[in-house]
Length: 221
Image (cartoon, rainbow, N blue to C red):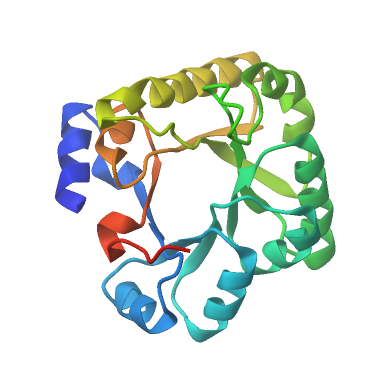
């Protein structure tokens, strides 16, 4: 996998060190994750707060990203558990996380703003024009660090068909950072998973979220 990331970076004339691998550990038992951490997979991504809550106390040497949807009633526990929350999909959620990060002493809490760049009714996230209108206010939240943008790709027949989604997120990031200058929005781009991460890297991904390609097919839920 690392060689595939390096090849994609070479094609895009990028440094592989600029791409962070989040190992998606959903349904993977803690004992197996302990071996993964020892092998160097030290950034773990969980979809559910409650699953991370059961694993994190058993493991050391890892940082944790929340990469699944966050319900408001689990926001406090998420702020306590996770180093980065990648699925901030509304201004209301951002404001809640900002308040909690201040109260709990987790400021600045790193977050990604989830964007529905494909305008898919089945997907969560800011619509691009809504994010543009609200970005200045989000950037002013004192207890959050806006690391960048995140998106979930469409279900498509081939990895190449996913490329336009990644390109649109990169272009949106560039446009927003020009329109709202200053330290508000970071340049991070969390995009790409097991089936399409090389294309995402070629389009500028700085974070890729990989589960099945590392841990195999998960059992059906």
